[in-house]
Image (cartoon, rainbow, N blue to C red; front, side, top):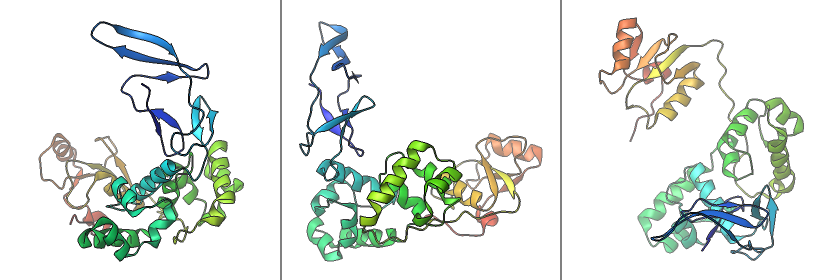
Length: 294
């Protein structure tokens, strides 16, 4: 049996463990295994014509089947999951979304603490989730735009736009071209702004974080071992880059600082000592801010 899964963008994909290829000739190729037979077999199937979730007619696009119904419940749930994950709203997973009866991203911000408590049957969980939701209101467009599930518009495209735009109203064909976005990404984004943004009921400001401009490179950084001042190396890297540092994954010739907060004498640390490279035991000494792990 071929089981189909409706994803964020409305595309139907397989949930089976076999390797599957489905084309417009209505053929499906997959690896069949049993006690008596192993190998590849071709079988003829009839692909679905209606969405298994909402019943809307499906359409082909680039050899994939799509449900274009914007009110499809399966798509709505996936969009809310994606939104919460991207904005790091802890506690708003698939189970919570179902219990809260959410069908649209904007409904997240209509929730009261009492509504959450009644749905999740926990005062403590309700307090935490309500705080997470309130806190996410302050997310800039740099995080918000990739969270909206606009086809082809992710973090990379958003970062490029933030270098030439101040807010959502600055986004147009000219600014997209200036930011280096391709035609398909541009068309998808402009289509969303023209057709969906006017009806968007989110409480966010839709303003980009402007990148910090540095007059010169402050140094070249390499990080060794686990960090104490940041939860992840990715967060530390972003903070360092904002302050004019270049971050590399290995000890190249141009490295000026090695960060070693763990105190473990690694091969990188030994190489830094031998080469006279500055060893930093606390990133805060470079960036001047506290990002400690609670």
